[in-house]
Length: 157
Length: 157
DNA sequence: CCAGTCAGTTCTATTTTGGAACTAAATAGT
DNA sequence: ACTATTTAGTTCCAAAATAGAACTGACTGG
Image (cartoon, rainbow over all chains, first blue to last red; front, side):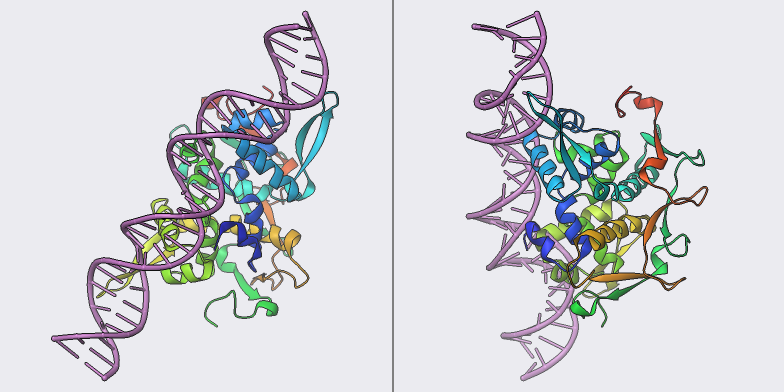
């Protein structure tokens, strides 16, 4: 199976990765959350080639994650801004970064610290159940298959 | 900059993506969380070529995310199991999948539903501050730069 | 008219991936 | 003893994606 066909799979993770799972794309999003908006700035900060950056920004736009907005006419210049859908990916960025903070930081410590404004402490991100408010671990979750794809996704049945 | 050098950047997200950011790797992890352990099963479920799968499993193992454990001698056969470090990536998988559930599901609805055992409801995953227990949104976070990399990561300073 | 800015596009060489076939180390059946 | 089967890979080559550099277009400012 080709990577470009994974969005056809009955899997929300695969479908999401079809938009944000290419090389560099999640780093582009990190920069978006840090306030970067312009092509030149993404390119300089990431060191990605312009041609790949152009492709990634287009896919993020097509996926509804970024909006292309003119910030100047004559000559027209456009910048990229996170949409509400895009901001919903923040927990993904935070958990990936936190994993790196925890397991991959050197002697100097993590490059960035995220502070929770409300309590003033460094964020120790956890997964929370929106219904009951409790902290959730992997073993607290049971998975149910949509009957439409019965037997196609889960193992042991 | 080459993708294989991103682990050199002062960015925990980049360092994490150097391990899990290749094509197919997060889908391998999804399957791990669904209980898949064996090479043949990953290969069949994902449709990834054996040669790429082999490479991804090796990188996950080197990154301490999977353990390669013999489940049989004569002939020796090994399977892959999530480590504690690996299980810490669960929130990443859940939030990516939930984003797909929310924005990319078709008429049939999401392929899988995750149920929180403790409350019995479908999980609506949120980001939680481990210190104060509150739900956290992107705008609730302020970022501080490690002085070691002063001025290298943040913009506007 | 010339240099500079910004957001790309185009070009070629290198790297990665996809698809298929092949290998190794056994066991089970005839 | 020979043959097929199982499982976990490796090897090979063509096709696709990426890296790096140069180029384009639409202006502005001097």
